[in-house]
Amino acid sequence: YVPDVKRGKPKIFVSHGIGDPVLPFGNTRDLLVPQLRSEGYNVELALFQGVHEVPFDIETRGMDWFLAANS
Image 1 (cartoon, rainbow, N blue to C red):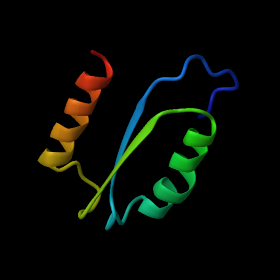
Image 2 (image 1 turned 135 degrees about the vertical axis):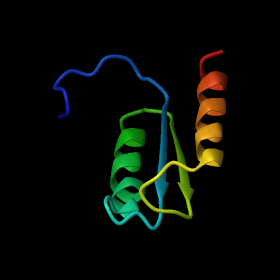
Image 3 (image 1 turned 180 degrees about the vertical axis):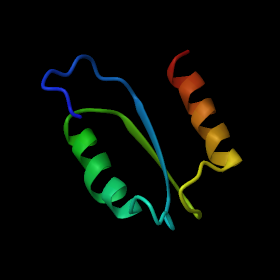
């Protein structure tokens, strides 16, 4: 679902495993992230070697990014 009205410009952290068999990472890298950036969103993209998961180092990176972005 994509709302018709957008409010604000939150910073966005996206991570994706390049071997994800559920959601192709190319859609995220080549479509979703560029679309968000073209709409003025500040997007941090973290690609990693892996599948449909969130490895600990990516989880830590995302949390560090979130804390820095909101301090």
